[in-house]
Length: 263
Image (cartoon, rainbow, N blue to C red; front, top):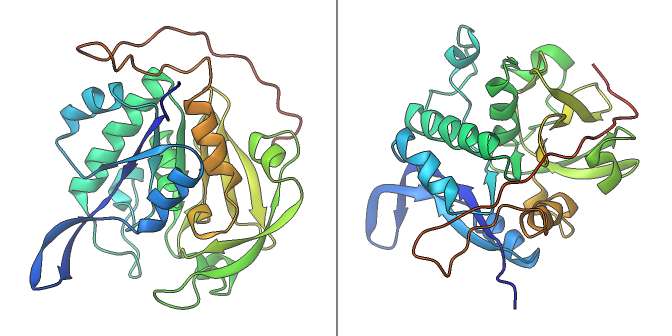
């Protein structure tokens, strides 16, 4: 019987309190792991580590989910911090950049959620809007601290996200930053009514998708199911876990045609 694919999920590195403890902790909302399990995968948490360990970690997994979280360091895209940009978490930035580089080099499936999508864009040379209300004139993407809101996104026909979620859908969202200049090799796959980029995907990789919303918070998460399906597909590079070390089979990257590309 095939084993469920192992999906690595990156985590926060934060000071946390639980029970009688008050300590630095690797933190992740349980909804991420719950959603991966409900989609047929097994969740493996990836707390920040030394960047040089990323390739070895990625070698052992079938797919990666880059979780949401703190603002990226604006220095990563050559910008001066906005007054509303949060303090950088450089350990996490460095770790997740290395994980993403290893994932793309091996062409294993990756899904970026919120911060994770922004990291994917910055990794490809793109930039971010540091405080979205300055650009769109409202705070509808992040109206309340500590709460998700719901707003509509419309997907782009001809993209992978457009095939998974055709038309317009309401999604769970909580972000004050967004994609500005699009990174190389990426196309826009969804937008909000105010023009904000809500999903991107790679034209160079088998499955490299980013969504600005939080699919793990919805009752239905087709993009997470698609990640797990891609991780467990026949053409995946799933490691042979019966061997003493993981081995992966080579594959070619299928070409894809995009019927619509939104700048």
